[in-house]
Image (cartoon, rainbow, N blue to C red; front, top):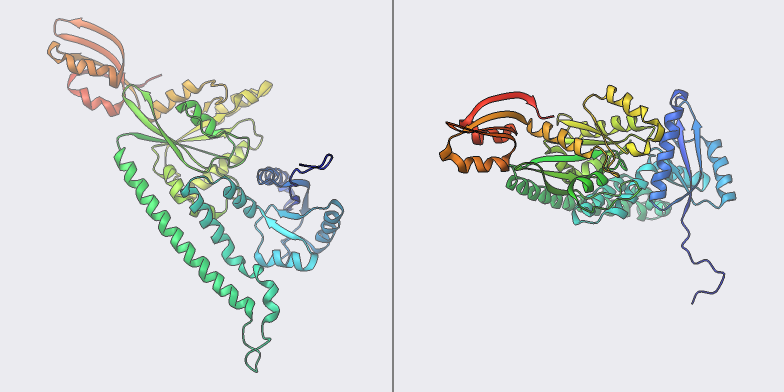
Length: 435
């Protein structure tokens, strides 16, 4: 039984956050990035006590931030009982070691926090393998830090020249070999999973593939649930979704598409993560259409668009057709003018609320048009072809039906992909897409 008055709630580790700004003109961007790091830390269950930005002309090669700045930070950390110092940039292993050696500060970086979040949120075998692979790739050049306490063994015994290697260096070599072996095994297993995915896709080659992409927490999972009627996890956290989820949805008469929800992107996404998640990102690379979901209520949404486009280019998906989807219009309130501005700037984009469902019907119409290029046609079916006429209800939207001396004349909206099935009965075609 817990004694009265004693708080047994687990205490979260406390952290200061640090960003380095090398150009005063980029100070506002540095602030936004540091705010994002705060969300990442909170998602990783770390309590953020304070945030700092140091203006510098160059990065300190030894400790990343300046010596005087770190001395001040150390004093503040001791006073506030703070455990960690998290940099908004990726710091080198030697810099982390020097910060600990010279200032007694445990320093982490943005990549380590992202990896920790991915580790927490990975649920499927595939995601767990991908996260583990990314972790190992990150750890490999940082092994020396783990064994620095054995470095003093170097030269303590061996040849008279003192050139023999100590336990620390030997252990590093052993660990490096173990990690490289595990990386090789994980890569082989993920290659096998990717081969299975390719085989599965071949079985549904006739179905068009739509993939949701976007900045993390833009509302992709909410939109996926709205479109498919599924109940995929939705949380106000970064990287709540890691596992790619796919469902078949009928968006038109006789036309099914496979819609996939994927891991979110972020600025400065570690290259090791992009490389490790190639099996998951295969859904993106194989898509016929990408729905690029953007949180329009976020002031940094245009920077987020650029960040996502950068990742799409890195994985070779920049040439896939994209429909820009501005989500969360319900959060704009009186600032709906942003919708008007963006509709002019990003012509052809959609503006929706996955939460309320506003305009999602219009979005599906846009998806249908992008995928199928639906057209309005007139057909004449002889009376002896009534079976084919009956099938028209499954592959098209019939607008009118008239009985003539020569058969049944039908006006319908049909996708170009289905048109070949009834092309022998076509009498008139309009190139206008369905509105």
